[in-house]
Image 1 (tube, helix red, strand yellow):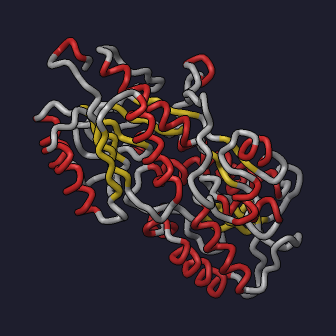
Image 2 (image 1 turned 180 degrees about the vertical axis):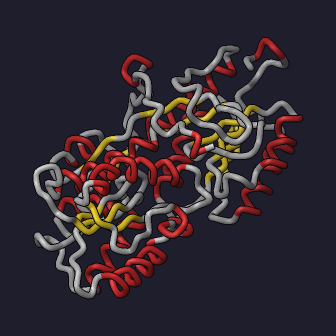
Amino acid sequence: MGGDDGPELTGFTGISMPTDTSERWVIEGKALEDNLKGLGYDVIHHNAKDVVEDQISQIQSMVDEGVEFLIIAAIDNKSLGQVLADAKDKGVIVISYDRLILETPDVDYYASFNNYQVGVLQANHIIDRLGMRENPGPFNVEIFSGDLGDNNSQYFFMGGLDTFESFIYDGKIVIPSGQTEQSPTSTAGWSGDVAMERMNTLLADFYDDLELHAVLSPYDGISRGVVQALVDADYEPGTDDFPVVTGQDAEAASIKAIKDGTGQTETVFKDTRLLASTVTDMVEALVGGGEPEVNDLGTYDNGFKFVPSLLLDPVDVTAENYVEVIVESEYLTEEQIDAGEALSERPRRTGVTAPSRSERGRVPSGPGRAAFA
């Protein structure tokens, strides 16, 4: 796929981000744009703001303008087949960014984190926090999953459920709602409001005479909606009776809650600067006539093929290590955390590069089972 097989590549890249309602996508889109422009490449950057049709038309426009590369974080990972077929006819190299694009042969590479491990970390936080290995329980737990249109959601979900499996079998974990499949636990649009509404319903339907001990939540925005529903139901944050609530993405508002003990107690940090750097390196390698580094060839099946992937490791974040992991790495400042928002553009950490192959190691292939095909 390098430059030896066709016209010399210039690095002209189109970036398609899915939404501006989660701060990570705005920051990552800008980081990718800045990184690629820093290499001297022309860049077109669009954010589709949760509108699938807009993302398709934006991608088509970039293809028509002659981009050589597309970096796409899909809104609906099954919606892009036709536009990517047109892109491939024009020789465009397609990199699926963090969310695997499905049901098309026209995806060349996938870059993300080990998303199955995200669910493992979240579930283990609940297990450890409640002392499930030592205490007989039972512990009442409810499960939330993400948007069904995001392929990553199933990996988060299965990582958590698989980790809970032996505890459920032993009767230590009880799920009073009985909702243990992805569809009934899903959260449309990853919306905190949707999550809050479902949590309200669960509390009303199943917890009149029961105590809720934990909520497995896949994303910080969902977690904050869950916490609000719990507060509205007179659970008091910071007390021993407040349920353990997990999360993901290290958003400032959730790190503040973790720091202050006001609800959520954990998030999973995926250093998106490294992901943006990794994808930049992929483009640079291809422009130079080489092949980009990948570390997984047999896990991520998009319905047509196993997409060559480069996966980074997520990190568990709690009150005990947020300073080391989040602040000292310059991902967020204490001021941003205390304000509960990334006040302005997050500081760009100079010299941030993706870890080497030896530092990353081989990512376990836990999610690569037939159930995900």
